Image (cartoon, rainbow, N blue to C red; front, side):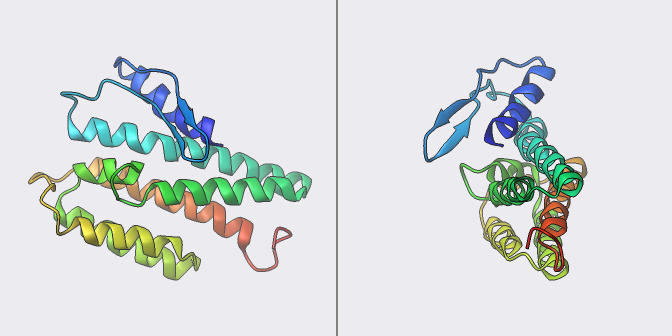
Length: 179
């Protein structure tokens, strides 16, 4: 799951024609892709940051589909853990992908992330979204918000959060075989 997430970053960087190294794994800590981000616009850096969680969603969704088809609980576990790890990675704090992506969002767009995260928490009953909202709330008070909005990045961020939340919800829904 982590490899697929990191390859999402790597492929997106390469697709943009930028230099990148293969993922580096740090046992117990995760992984990262080193790439030439210096001088790259905030919106592009945000898109690269969000490409990992989107690839992670794809992996989790495939696992969920395999679980629906086979009823083998290992696929449900992989889907749930994969989606959880990628939502965790979208918490907008430094080092995590969400912390890099939120740098492209204005204060108003950060409020949108807060509202959407709280709505996802209420709708999907997943407490992890409270941490996303809390991280975005904290980032309202930092001085790193650009003056210009980035609707494309906001939509990309919201799409990743929603898709990952839905995968977890489908696997953890009451009455599902995985519960």
